[in-house]
Image (tube, rainbow, N blue to C red; front, side, top):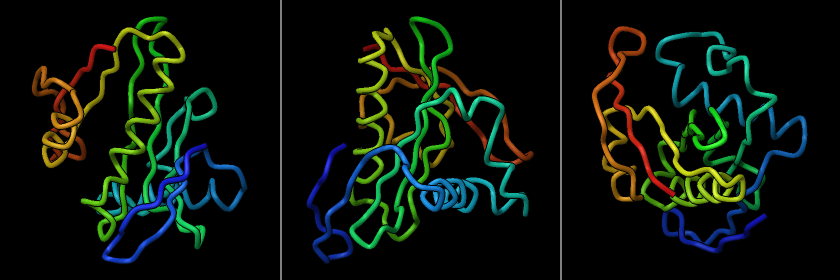
Length: 157
């Protein structure tokens, strides 16, 4: 559990980066994932979930008002490789390092598991974020919902 003091929209806040704990935090976690990643394509909040939620490691960035500002998830594909999915930060909270703090926490989890690499599927508008955090762009992959281009990215640990 990490507590980080930083400036957000010119207001000092404390941000805690940790797994969700309460039922409300879990509900808010999935709501933010849906809101940022799927709400333009589906009214169903479950569209932001998959069959391996229970075996994945989840992280939130939560402020002192208990508002979740960012989320992320990682799961192992095999003993050497993990995959990050469902990274999302509230639109008004972007460019404040919340995504970077969540990403670093997910990377630390993979290192603790002794993984050798992490892959992810980045949306086009997130490529530079991942490049700045050490990921390499590998190839253009699928198009989600017929309009959201994704790219395979990888980091060696």
